[in-house]
Length: 307
Image (cartoon, rainbow, N blue to C red; front, top):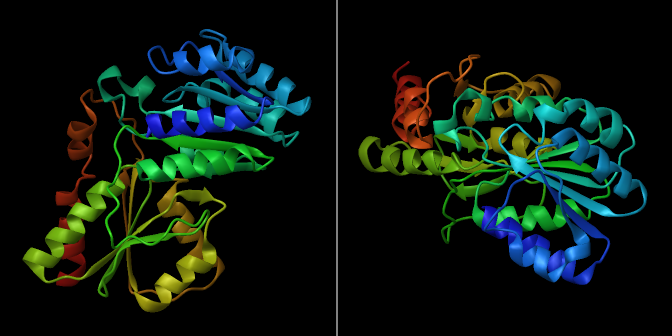
């Protein structure tokens, strides 16, 4: 996803000198070309994420379109007060980008595991929470966020789902169907959408269960109308997220079911069980350890149809 984000900022910077990109001691071997072409639009402020956010907000208040970039929790939790008080409160055009959602930096331990970020950023007024599930979504979402005239958070993953001929066209803010089915709807957010697609394929081939798969690239604003339409057709819902069980996709689905009084037969949330991910390992290992892989999605769905 990172390369597609870089493509987006390169294209935007070319047509708008007011776009300013700020990184916190990250991006070596990635952003040198951007710096070479647009030296007055690029700043590396070092390991000072709080100052980075403050500088970005100040520039945004002077009508610049600003982007901050770092890994894992560093552009969000480390400078949460500055995001809240400086950027979001004043509703400035700042796009906060984290590379490494969920367990992408799994070998570096829980300090680098972004597993509460969506909930925390969603709770801030005036902040969009955008979570691409594919490479092309990362590019599309980045371009749109730069022009939203509000504070946005983009959570990039190091993994990504593959788009097939069956996937619906991308429409910003709308739940996107990746696969059609009639028995159950799996809704995934971020790169772990790839596990949902693997599960749906195996459910069809080995268990004769027909699963639709949807990607949620916009947690906030959430596509309430689109979700209501899904639930009007399919009454069994499963959500999959590389995130804590509170405040993310599953919680958002529950909020909409209650708010809109939507009828359903079953709801299953697959996520971290309200715990810190203290185990160290790569992303695939941690997904398996915390029961977020296609195997575990399948087991959960088989349990639904046994009852």
